[in-house]
Length: 259
Ligand code: CA
Image 1 (cartoon, rainbow, N blue to C red):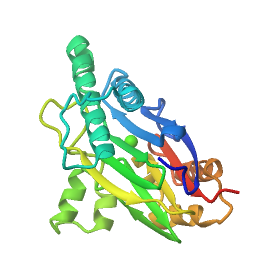
Image 2 (image 1 turned 45 degrees about the vertical axis):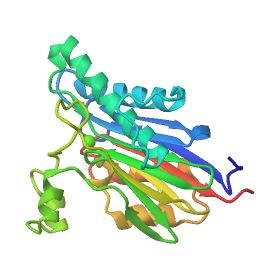
Image 3 (image 1 turned 180 degrees about the vertical axis):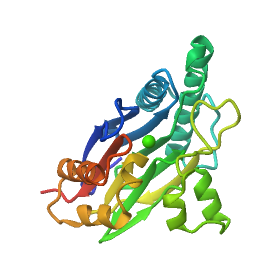
């Protein structure tokens, strides 16, 4: 592969928030491989922390150390290979979590969301997600959610039963319809995007998006000199200033022109 047309800069930050006494989110950044992961765990008896960290470790290990021809959940030859890597990594994480539950039954209720991205040398980016952790692409002042939430309220929005505003305030807004740790078959959503110089790719848990409107997120990213570290700090501060009701995790990736 040729050298990147731009330099990738990234930073990640996780924060317990204002109300919870422990943090069940996990994230990983492997900038040289273009790999980024955010997981938001759930379940009693410390299960949330276990599920999200098992998922992040499994996904990172699979993507970094995958042997040629190693496709534990099959390779769709028609599909782009980076997406297939993310899909296999997610399903392997699901398997690791269910195996852990079999060994440690008190963790039976644990599960985790997952959003992961692989950014190639030329800016082509593949994003995989399960649950309601999100990826956004910011391009020339416009912020666009590139993932679909696997949540009960989003299903009602898709059916026209709830408006987006009603969904955001709904008492069941935290109910997700897909998670790693499920025994049944698990479809992994994959999207392909293209990062251009100046663009941001943002991965986050719902502790950010449940507290901070997309417009406010976009405003923070729109400052031309903003670097990823500062962006993460300001996003977490904004979520905490709005109440910090949940754990907050952000991974901010910027395609910067070489200096
Ligand atoms: Ca959460």
